[in-house]
Amino acid sequence: MSTTPELHCEVRGQVGFITLTRPKALNALSLGMVRGLLAQLLAWRDDPQVLAVAIRGSNKEGPFGHFCAGGDIRFLHQAVLDGNPQVDDFFTEEYTLNHLIFSYPKPYIAFMAGVVMGGGMGISQGASLRIVTGNSKLAMPETLIGLFPDVGGGYFLSRCPGHVGEWLGLAGETLGASEAMAFGLADAYLPAQEQASLWDDLSRQPFNSSSAVQDYAQARCRSTPPAAARDTSAINQVFALESISAIMQALEADSSEWAQSTAAALRKRSPLLLHVVLEQIRRARSMGMAEVLRMERDLVRNCFFLRPGQSETVEGIRALAIDKDQSPRWNPARIEDVEETLWRSFFNSPWPAHSHPLVALRD
Image (cartoon, rainbow, N blue to C red; front, side, top):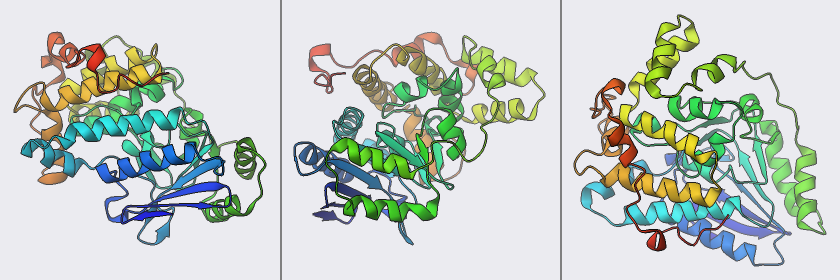
């Protein structure tokens, strides 16, 4: 058993159980949590007594609650201002963790209750069984803080049906259980009140193989969503357009409530990062997970350091989480003012290929 103030890991029966225990921060991932998860998953990967892994979050009322609200953006903001090199460590190690989960050789079962956003998606989307419940809230809202949907977001958003991935990555829309399943971001539904019994039963059942654990958990869940998902025809039509400017023109010319609310949401996001995100998701469609994570490692370094003193991400975090004035000073200020050479420069790697911090990752 391994326990820290932020992470509780134990083997019960033939399953390794992980509970995120940082409820005051909605289980936002600290560097210590990333390192603890990575070390534990590597140890269990090589332990023949552990047939599978299950992971959940918690809140002040107890286990489950919220899964994970993302990365610790307050830490990142202060670390950049202080010149703390742990900024680079955090993203290199977090993306290494994401890759390990996507390539994990044993069943990895994610109980995705409550808030599952950003970094929380990164530690759940690679699961072999992604379980949502009635209170699940999934999103990749990074453009609101001048960032992009990282932690492999380019990979899993680009594999959503049609052009739903562009819409989710750009607008940061929050999904419930039904739409998460319909859009390929969850596998199964389980009523909230049944989570604890499944969790406990996984520790008590005798299993003769890893696949038996997966099959047992899958059989306890519902494979059909609890309600119908929205019609995506308008999303697919608009978000298939060739540029952010074209998308905005189409939305603002459409008087429907969906188009107007979506246009308003995009106008609040970083204009620069909207251009970056559209390109990120479209490039990722033809990439494997390791290649996507290397691209995203380049992007996140450039988000913080490409323009010294002009980081959209630092400014976005300031406005949302530090000063909380909700008035980020984006630069450029308007979608129409972003030059192509500027957003394309974010895709230039700061490292030669042989020295990339994620060079060892393989698909």
